[in-house]
Image (tube, rainbow, N blue to C red; front, side, top):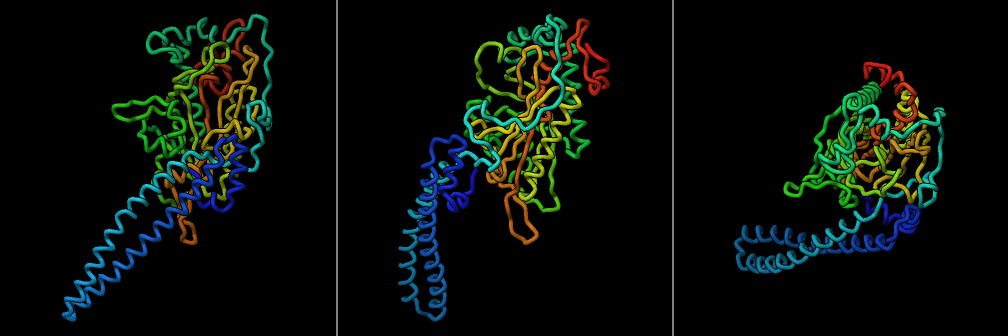
Length: 422
């Protein structure tokens, strides 16, 4: 959530930044400023009357001490009248504050200056590429056929048990999942991240704090009777570890990693683009999160980008890093880098990670702050990234490494998997 002070300091600049993010309601900025001014005016009136009541109460005590009961009673009557004026002001203040917050949460985060203009994925900037795109034989097939050939993943069985988008991993397919998860966690913890195993359901407060509610409510599975949400990513519960917390500067950087299943209701079109593991409703992912000093967040962002890049290099996958344009960015992000790996059998790029800096957008909702050396309390900056999401990584590993005799696994996985391939 944006801070009102940011909007009031430069409202026209804020509107321009929102336009860069393809936001269609810039007039909300003026509405928020007006509501904040109204709230402050009501608050001032309330405080003025409350001050009169406090002063009068002292005078009543002094008069009673001098035996002037008549004078004291006269002031008491005035105090009673003032108290009657307070209640409608209090109600008006509560209602105005609610309108202010309800409007403020509709604004997305402001894009950083480095974010390129644009509205569609085609306008994202390629930052750099790495790895060699393999040349496959004429008989190469996509991962969903390989998964069936080697009995690794059963999509139809998942459809029978649950529904479309819930694959069942079998035998070496399940072992490959487990190998990747363990490799990712080991790589992250070796880099100083503390591992968490969080709940896979969260309450509405947690989903609100990281920006999933109300923006992505339709994408989340909701257990209505208990009002709990299945997590779309470990970012949600893990970041909430520090909700309503005041840190010390010496606590920085806070580095956390977690494995979790992820649940997303997102609908997609039919066809090759969403076939097999390209888009599923339940998948496994390892996440990295950092909570840092505001002055360090962009330095940390680059560090996290390099960290994810090294994972892909160890997996020997061809990849490219994209800086997302304003119109293709998420609601809560100030800047996002996407990682895509090349699927040689499908001959297309598949997204496997997003690394984002949220600046203070999440922490304002989280009420996660730190006390600086000057004693003042400030909002922290939060960042997160996928390190990595498994489905499309598995798809590319199977497709890019297929041979006539099976699937050859990258060296880094062979020890975890207990073999050179499938």
